[in-house]
Amino acid sequence: MGTDLLLRLISDDGPWVLLVFYLLYRDVQKDAATRTALDKNTAILIEMTTLVRDRLPRGYVS
Image (cartoon, rainbow, N blue to C red; front, top):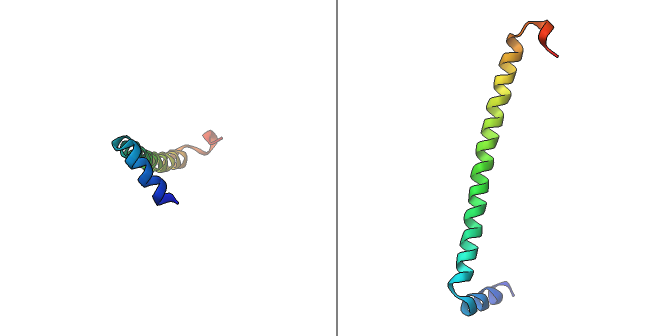
């Protein structure tokens, strides 16, 4: 059923359907790249926070 529907959409609407699927695919790739960058930045911030917390005198830690 999925293949028949896809072929019917492609034959009826042609390149527009392919363009929509391509743009959705690229959007998913962009979201994955953004998520990877944010995860890396979060790990760096956690490490920096840990280093600062370890270097502070004990009275300043909340």
